[in-house]
Length: 70
Image 1: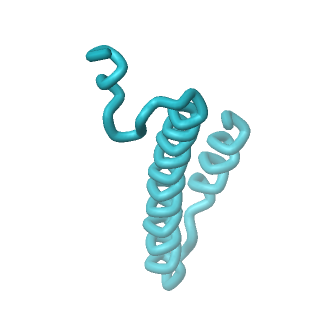
Image 2: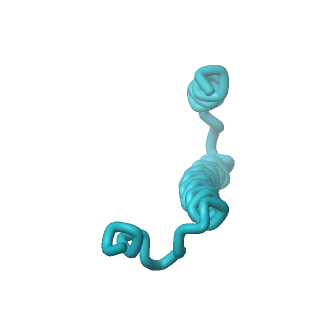
């Protein structure tokens, strides 16, 4: 992970000249969107894995407090 950050920082120091500036900025926006989407998907996968674990234990998916009532 730190290697990726270092690579991104080294790329950022190489600023494009003139007409490539708009393209460079657009690529930075796209990369930021990809990173955000990646984090959201990782979160969703983690939540799904938790649901799978609960279902494998036999707990109801929507009512985790039901076991406390019994």
